[in-house]
Amino acid sequence: MNEVQARTWIKSVGSVILEGASITNTTVDDAVVKMFFDAVDNDIVWGLLWPLIDGIFEESTLVKSDLEFVAAAEKASIDPLTILAIITAIYDLWKKFRAR
Image (tube, rainbow, N blue to C red; front, side, top):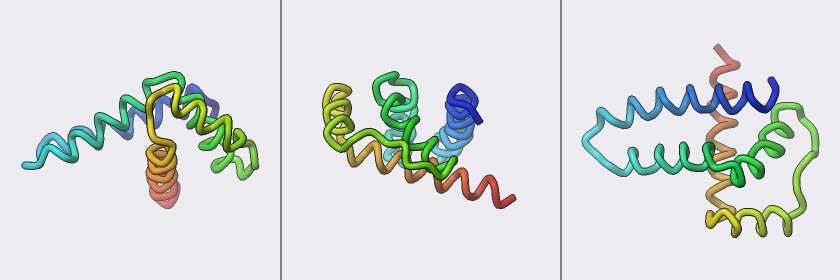
């Protein structure tokens, strides 16, 4: 799966999650899904996410240095831990998808 295919797949999974979140009585899940979409749509954040996601899927060690990662996250005004949480969620979804 290349970068464009992965981004498209992640967005399609996100749209299913968004549909599910929209039918609940709470708004917290809606906010979390919105944050997810904002992160995937943001080219700076995606630039951080993709090498890490690709590294997980391809079992490589291609990741930015800690300093580059934190600097880019600050430039995008997003907490680096949030990016890692998003990556973890994407990976968990991917594992469930592959298990089917």
